[in-house]
Image (cartoon, rainbow, N blue to C red; front, top):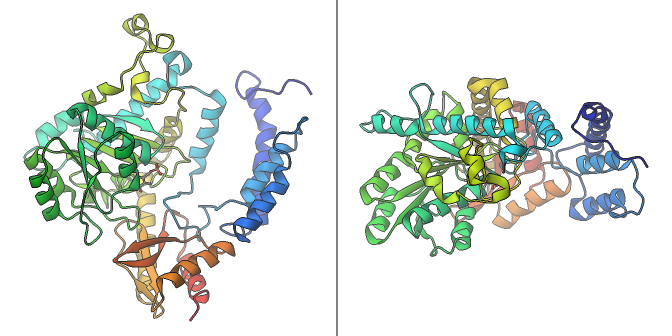
Length: 474
Ligand SMILES: *Cc1c(COP(=O)(O)O)cnc(C)c1O
């Protein structure tokens, strides 16, 4: 076998073109073989088919068929978020244009740990990350969330300095937020609501912080009175983590109240907007994030309400000097004399070393759709959630948990036990008919539909309910 071709270089595009045809054909074949939102047969049959396709994973002699075989097998066995009946998680269908940009990122393979591996990509990351930070914190010329209270001037002054670092998602962003707080205050106590994401607890554990103080969230959102009393009782540096878009129900904590309490008690504020941050793009829904600009750090996750292929996370930081603890020297990557000579020092923008240019697909999406175009997608999925909630509320067989806060709808068959709710979900999964999530709220188990597909039609939502109804034992 001759030396295999490379993806970049003058011959890269010509080498890629026929391979792309193979990939696209395999995606089509695999999806047709699946014939639904996920493969039928449950874990056993899926594993068996995948094993048959893979064969020996370490063959002595390779075969050019592997690309088609394995891509087809993965597509056949995929849970496809572009299928309107695939609605379990914050697992978005990526935009075609973002995915195409990601191909270029793989072909060029810049690595964001030193300028000499990513000359243009490093500048793109700096510009786009800062622009997104300004969207969070508001600048005079960007439609941010700056509110019109007395602090507006300082908000804007800080907004123009705000920055963001690129992460692999909400988990890494939350972890960095805790790390920056710990470093700034020489230790910190995390205080979060009962609905806060599990990654915050893990980050506290990983960083050697005390057990988080969990404040009750009786209606799914952090209770300001309970937060006030917790902050009154606690001593030492405190970090409050609020959530804008809980994973289970999409609920948004009362951000202005929480920001006010943090100011009163001198606590630092982190807002996990991994889900709800997407509302920033929407003229209709942006105001629901009022208060976001008061946070010291904000988690964003554009592989949720941003329609990016994984990974596309950011941590926005109001005061960029908070990022100082990430500074790090490695002579082969950011020698002092190179930095003094004007070569950007990139190591201090992440805890990772080799790092993909995830900013490219984000930048391409922002420029292709514009804020207005992304905002329309947000509006569409929020509207779909309301349509589904309407159908459920009007349906005698179902109980609706509540009106959707973002694009998550929780419901359950009337009179079903928690075990029945779990069994219906599993049956639909195993039969390959629908992908629904589950959440326990108010002490009961609910089916969860997280609507992230802007192409969903009303008929799809009715089909989803019909499937659940038809598979509920009575
Ligand atoms: C999804 C989610 C996270 C974790 O993000 P990953 O990208 O999965 O690491 C954190 N917080 C909230 C509220 C989330 O919904």
